[in-house]
Image (cartoon, rainbow, N blue to C red):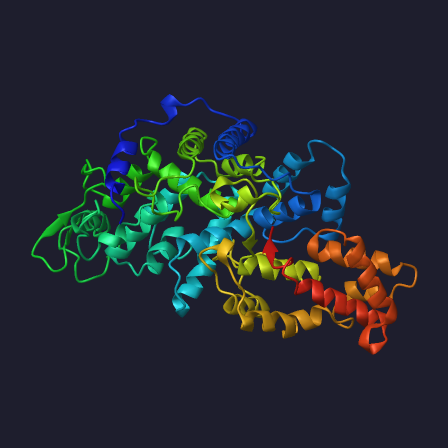
Length: 513
């Protein structure tokens, strides 16, 4: 751990209740404040902000970020042709109300919250956990309530979020302590698990005092591990003859000893604990902007401060003041000019991504990629509900399961690279082969075989379906010429399929820009 982290946490926790100090802002007001802070830093660094994203660029970005897939042909066309001044905030509201929002963000939060392992149990847990998340997100459950349920819920009830969360951490107190501090406080406490670092504030004792909160029975299911002491709230420190007692990171001990998990949860989500809000805000900012205000997201310290400390504090204060409403925070970020800038670099000063002078390119998650391919090719899965035992759980279809296995999640979307094997899979897989086949893709067949639609219009449609934009004049001229000539097979319908295949495999399709 870096020097000074403990001092930073204690200072934050000593700041007092957030709610009493802050005037609530609407999402629109907070978006304006975001832009004030970003603009001040850009000016201070003598940089130049990039212009706003074009309509095709922005509509694609919003659909991918909020609903997890590219817009359909009509949505992309209609947004671009809509002259209304309020079309952007209206689209954001529409996407947040769409049934795809909880489906997509269940994928997002699951990837963040569950330990990433490849064993069969964890693959099963991912499905049940996403089911629980969908239910929470459908009802827009507040973040603090979700976290409290994860930490204190029934660890034997398979439909609860706590069951998957604890099982993915193998019911080991040390794994739970590391996960809880990293995910909910933005503190990478596990660095101190084995020994004291000479220059780090976190010590071995601090780590095991946090682990001691997870030594009591979890609704009848005891925690595992050789270090678990016989007494709840205490744990043996490995390599020593000492025992650590449950103690919060601010040095205080729980007032009640009847339920240590509940005591820890209440301390973490308390409005007096601004570090909780900072961790959530920073993680969502990193998701939407490509880089966190604190980077890495779980290592804030005096040696690794936020790029915009006042902005991070403002966002955390407003998130807490608005009762940890996730949609409120998302709406504010997406309505900001900072989020809506083009990703094209228009000035050398925009190279530093932490200025947020332009949008950063981000690779698609495996789920975004598959769902976008499915939509663009007309092969979307039908969500017909689920079993009574898992009311929000949909079993993963074989094609989707194979795709997700080949395209595992990567920690940093902004640094994502496609491997040669992944690129070859996209080029040659049955999924894409069927998508560009006139026999298997009826929508493509209708476009390709139409005798009343000009070739240029057909190419336009394929671009809108895949890239959410129309082709440039040079792209259109080149591709129309290729299709009219019939390609290598001298068949114009097959040549149009070639164009569709090239668009699906283009770098532009595979990134959020």
